[in-house]
Amino acid sequence: MALPHTDAHVRHTDTVLIDGRTLCCADIERIARGDAAVRLDDKARKRAQEAWQLAEHTATLQPVYGRTTGVGSKRHEKVDEADARGHGLRLLRSHAAGVGPLHSPGRVRAALAIRLNQLAAGGSGVHPGVLEALEGVLRRGVLPVVHQYGTLGTADLTALAEITLTLAGERPWAQGDAPPVNLSTGDALAFMSSSAVTLAGSVHAGSELRQLLRANHAVTALSFLALGGNAEAYAATVHRARAHPGQVHCAAEIRRLLALDTRPAPGRRIQDPYGLRAFPQVQGPALESLDHLERVLNVETNARAENPLVDTDEQTVFHHGHFHTAYVATALDQVRATVHHVAALSATLLRHLAEPAMTELPLYLAEAQTGSSGVMILDYVAHDALARMHEAARLATLASAVVSRGLEDHAGFASHAARLAETTVEAFRQVLACILVVAVRALRMGAAELPDVPARAAYEVPARAAYELAAERLPADLEDRSLTEDVYSAVNLLPRLAAI
Image (cartoon, rainbow, N blue to C red):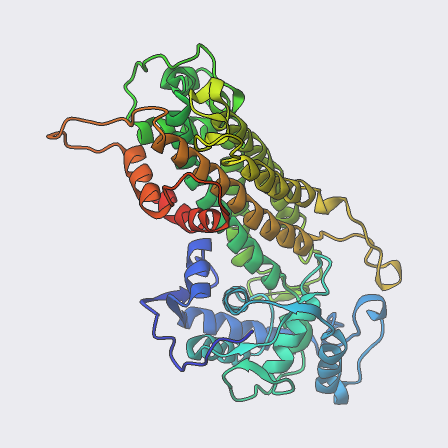
């Protein structure tokens, strides 16, 4: 679905410098949302020019894969020099076989920015005019049609072929219009040799999951209050005794949200259920896995990963395997697995929040009328979402493929791992939303007093602010009714809770 065309994307509030060195995940997300414009660095233009000249010269001296030869199992077939440009166009047309749903405008913008930045790193050998065209497309808000399916994790060949043919004027734009680019001899494979579209999806999924994990600190803090939790489980002394960074950070966040003293007061129970007591130990690995994913993505988006690599320092061309996406795929697999652990643990809170023995409130937080079901169904809704997360947590890297007559006998499947991460994002939102609805309802019904500070104190209790925000948006009535809108409202609250 295309967005209405604008010439300048009036939402731009700043500019991201595209230099092939410093593009980060946060910048990519701003570009994807339309909050930032792009500007190609002059040094990057020079690098691209030098790499193109070297690639052109080298091709007159020796075979260069995809430029003077066929690709895949046809790598030994020499291309007729007089038909070199025609070979490039045929390569693009034959590879532009993407199918399935279309990528969203934001995902396409992110992919274009990543590909431009990789080309700016100066290892592809594409003509500098391709970089100029990509910069212009991004600045004007022009978008190509890009299908989701057709890649194995050995470069996003189908998607990038579609983009390149659109740049060349052979395919219609999904949004806006741009003058066609006159592709040079070696631009076809040089442009396709990237996983920029997969990286765009990975960046977005990582950003969304990081926000949800931050929101989960607040959701868990509210559940802690509703259940009268024992704060000893979050004590700094406890977490210094086994100081995994993610776990330590998670416990510190709960202490901050609850404004806990150094020596916490005892809770209702000597030991809480795992949903409260083991929360830092389970959320911590997920936080660390996202840190690792971000490090991997920052390397990939600034990489000279094209095959072959045109290296102006050594004045030669290298053939290699940088197209393989094992780093991205395995990092995404770890993220989905650790976030599933978090969701499975957090979902146990629904049972405890609805249990009179834990809250001293009516079963399912129902109204007084006999037989009322209260929030019973939200346990089902959350576990439906959790089942989808379980399915999405399967390892994409367990897949295998042998293609191109056996020459390409392994694949990274990072594109599949990224799509599964998007499923995880949506399902995790629903799990947290269900818990938030129930926790706020329990607090409203008087399960525990909210922490407070003296009126003249110089600080606030963040958990109180989280409760007041949620209580303002979530309905207060207790009668049996559809809770669909409650869950939707809670989903919309999660980004604001993440910021508290």
